[in-house]
Image (tube, rainbow, N blue to C red; front, side, top):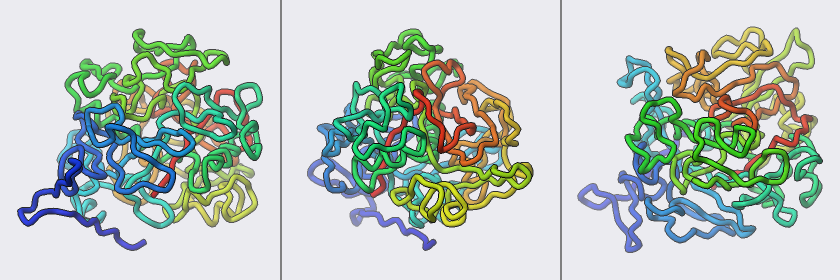
Length: 449
């Protein structure tokens, strides 16, 4: 893959160029085009898209870091999506300039190339590689998808779609996607051919941003879910099986009409459910519905030779398909060979906390939780939210990973409305397959430029 050179626009004095509408370009703070902002500050975690695809319009206030609509855009079907600019990150090891488990985030324009960032100890998040290219960012659904006249749309107040006939099934969408988890791949296409089911890497990029934001915040001013004691310093959600949050009794949600599931974006204090603690962020990542997120899979058809796979940076998310026979399919021998990096036999995979012995582990610990690697297997695993250690800690919400061996795995993330304190942005389950069909599995879509 060729090196991406990041070009900056600056005046002769080296300062960012400011256009008449107030947007700046160059190495500036939050508010500049495609700038992720600074952790702990207003506007962090979303940003101004460098361009808009056909069908997109910017919402009023999209350039104002203090606006509820900062970095928010609307597609022609009514879907609200957040632009998440590419960013570099560094997890602290205690010997790389940061204390153990500290996390720093830098804007994409902080370095002129990925290799220069790597030399400084910073990695470009895996979420920003697609189709063999480095991406400047990604549009992510603000809300879980609901049925909008046959289209899977990101609309506030919708009843979230599921992969089961019991609860607002995706099979009712245009084209009747299969009512199982693989059907979410097709459900995303009801909005357009370039949309795709959100990947595990994008979901965990949002988790990383929330972690860095919580560490840097000092008040609830720009991080509504901030907890100075550090006990519940993470995004909240519908997870107590009673339309509330187990860690925050000030929160309530509106019922979707099925069990104790909530309508999308229905929290009475929306910012407490956003990845950046502000109304501008992506919401409902903690609880409500497990989100199907492709990117990892397994071939466990023969346990003696079961293998673990991570999606290659050469795979283009908009082109993957939902079957198990073609080279474009996310499952099956042809797809594994064409789309994934083979990480080897599962019972010999020892690079992370995973061991695939059908157990539950909790993210966090006193030691280094995530790898600081800038490339290779550990970098990819960090991008998928897989920790080095898993002893549980408040900093990571004690979020649960179901560490299972599952043939034709399709990961799910975030937890559900009754997952209690083990739900959260770091929650992940490896015990569901492409054929799974549950009324508490949902999804959101994404789009690369």
